[in-house]
Amino acid sequence: MLNPLQLLRHSMLCLGFLFLFFPTANYNRLLLPVATVEADITFSALQKLKVLDQSAPGFKYQTGCQVRGFNLFLLNKKLGTLATCNPGAPINASTQQLISKAQIGDRLIFDNIRLDCEGGAQGVKWGSLGLTVVAD
Image 1: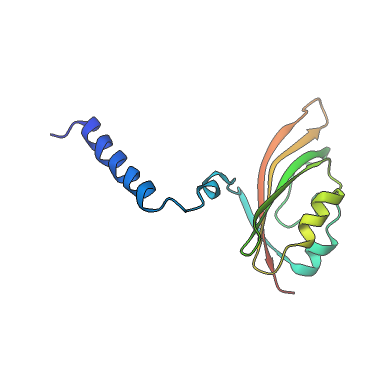
Image 2: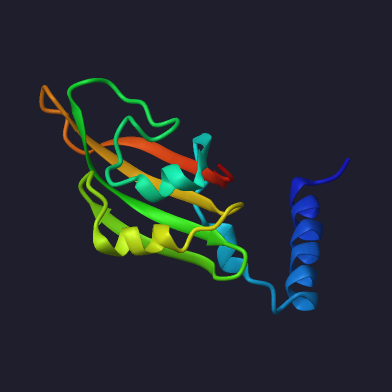
């Protein structure tokens, strides 16, 4: 019967060989957030998005709550991964600039969305929203 440590040793050796043979791979992509809710958004609707609220596809929360802030990641094939932080629900200038770089087929991940709700619940974590930009 195999000892679990023996299995671990072999898997670690395999992992070490991967890093040896593929040293130029971009490993920072492994740290990106994974969206808990996925939806599609048309290119024109994305360009009109000025506030992150329940008008965004797939983004639903209970009444009496407001968005406190979020992080936005743009996954673009040509530009790579770009990120910005947005305090509050209204989309600020740096986030709008990042959204304007989005093209059809790109993914936007709204991560670490925090809500302030009535009744004293402050900074409630909603999760993350992944939007794929599609043609009109």
